[in-house]
Length: 533
Image 1 (cartoon, rainbow, N blue to C red):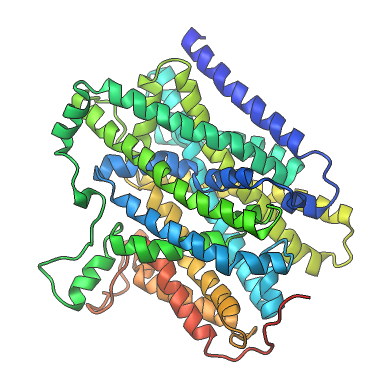
Image 2 (cartoon, rainbow, N blue to C red):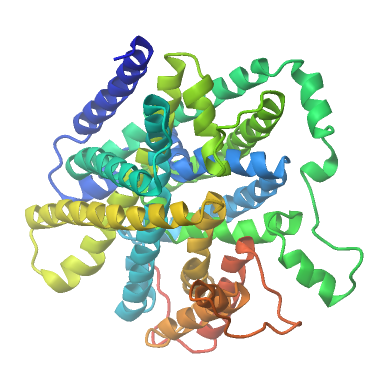
């Protein structure tokens, strides 16, 4: 084996050993479901903060954000970070206190107390299906490095079928390693490994920025010459077309992904959905000892989003400048793979292993949290109420561990299907996929939670699922989903009317929430909201 490859492999194996060891050590002595799901509510706030960052910074961000910077060559994606800060403040003061007051393990238990079991079941099912699809779709990204490494070592670009098998085998390896410590260690293993993984992820990204900058001949002057400099519209854009007027101008604005309005409104609803109604995110917040420290970790994670997103977008922009100055005929056609191509072919030995470890850190960090949340939600929302109502602590602990294994298998299936789609459609961008999946359903979740938390007598248990369906159907309409599905079969179902804006993904949760909320509050609740005893 080549000495350089041996060093990089050693760095990577050391990373895997440390992560598995820490995960199993921190998660030892778990006797009940509360320890597995909430860590006994004894996790320090700064560890919760690192875990939130690791969970939301997936491999999709590690490659997707540089892909956005490489493709767009600006920082307009950063506008979405504005809404994430606003949303976390709102989530901190609207959602977290009821979850602590009701002492929930699964946040959908709150809906049982507020409305009834039908609403809880609908919300829990939506979460599990959406989280499974979204996390599985992003999981394949971690295998990109191994597919390109195969090409580097063999000197031959793998065929589409070989690439698919590399993705599948890599996905299985990542899932199995992550499932080991997640299944045995629970949320404590997840959070403490997230602390290490967040540090590796951001540290390796900063190393990449430095190496790219000093690899560009002429440095800053060359960057300015190639990009034309940086202007206000590189960071802030309204999306309003001066050639259009009135409603048509607004319709055009909804059709642009990154605008200041999408950042202030669309991204606010996105983050309220993902950080207020998603068991994956909220569960780690509930491991903090009290409400005050939980809020602190959540709000600070929003502030951390800005430098993190800025760093990864900078990597993409610098990659574009670098390959303009150093043309590479072997550069992948897919922007998502450009950063990984640079890591494998241009990074110094040792640092290359560190960057690849950063890729796996982001993949495993988001995967472990998803597996833990899915297993917890299944056990509390379905196993204990319906499958085994008299379950002992030992039986519940066994059930949640087997559920982790089951969801790990389903993740592999979804990731494999996603890999096939990406190979067939190489120009697919990761960020719209990752956020778009949530967009179809999380507006329905957020609208129902808003009905429960912002009103006391509105929303009826038997009709809330209908409100959620209404929200989903409206999002399907404004996202042009029926025609997108029909296009796969070479046909078109209808032509959208000129007065109906076809909206990009940052707006889907916003309007899904509004429609769901309005339908839900139209009905009086069968029970009034009462604070827990």
